[in-house]
Amino acid sequence: MAKQLFLLGSLRRILTKMKRIILLATILGLLFILGCEEQLPIETKECVSDSDCIIGGCSGTVCQPKNAEPVFTTCEYSPAYDCYKQISCKCIENKCQWDKTEKFEECISTAGETLNN
Image 1 (cartoon, rainbow, N blue to C red):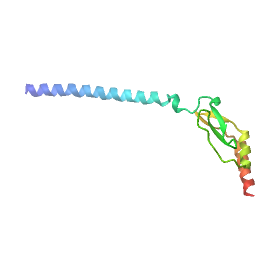
Image 2: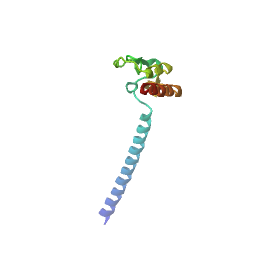
Image 3: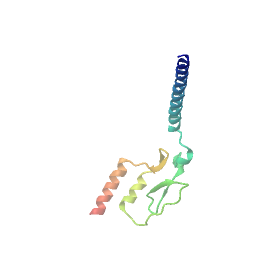
C-alpha cells in the first residue's frame, strides 16, 4: 500500500511538471508566432521606399523592383498605355505596384472602349 501511495505521489508530481512544460511551450510558441508576424526579413520585401521601384517594359506598363531582372514586354501601342502616365510606380506594402486611382481606372475603361470600336 505504501508503495502504491509513493507511486501515485510520483505520478502526480510528473503530471504537474508536464502540465507546466506544456503551458510554457504553448506560451513560447504563441510569443514566437506573434513576434514573427510583422518582422519579415528584408530579403522577402521587394521594396521599403518608392525609390526602390522603377517603371519598365517597352511601353512603360511594368512596375518592378529596381534590383530585379528586367521584364521584357512586346513593343506595341495601345491607348491604355497612356493611362499609366497618370499614375505612379510606388512601394506599397513592401511590393512595387502601381498606385491606381479612379481617374486611371476610368482611363483604362475608356481606352478599352476605343479598342472595341
